[in-house]
Length: 306
Image (cartoon, rainbow, N blue to C red):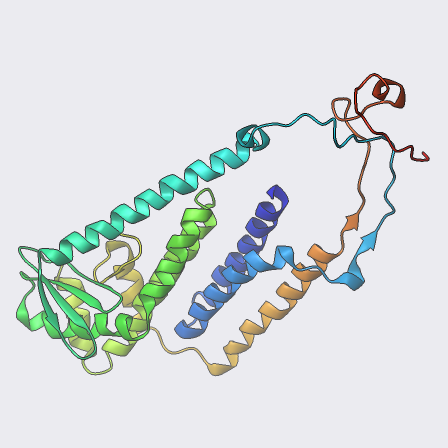
């Protein structure tokens, strides 16, 4: 299990470095979104994939005798090593925190005005200037100026139509299982950035100047929830403006995504070229000599040539 975790970490690091160095500055937002989702899934799958032709298996050697009926039974908790207990407790706490954030959204919705439309559900939050979306729900503060509301709705509607909340929820669940892995948080942050770039690109097609003015002039409060698409995020404002002003990348630069193929192939070779050598020398606490077994009542021993 520890080997699997380490290999996944290394693969994720390689994928993220490739993204930051070669792909992040391009305007292929949908391609980048797919890249991040696919590479994260690959980092979890590849450590389990073994190509049989590349494996080298060493013959097993038996240098001891193991007793079946005479083995001492231990309780379930005693059989679990402390690293797994720590991982389990951390995942339980992360799941509780995730449930708490979901309850926050439900409570906010229950005390707001809900209006159903064909493509989305508008949730007007009283005495608030917040603006964010979660699946089909678009939360809008009642104190947001009416002349800004249409542009914000157009922006958030892109998140709704493209199911951006599903991406963030996927990484939120990954954070529960791999709560100790900082790269999962980086992956989620990168995807959230791309969501804003995608929504801005779609929303500004009609009135780019008004969208610029709205981003710069308004300071919307945001909910501190990692799996909602926030309209206003101070850390993203500068990046969003830069990307809106940036010229579209040339189509030829899409060839950069071909880098994924040798990366995946190299990882497959790495995980498959393993020497499966099993050291069967038993520890003193687990091995029993033939002489000693004669003193154990009902102990059956099969003599094995050494």
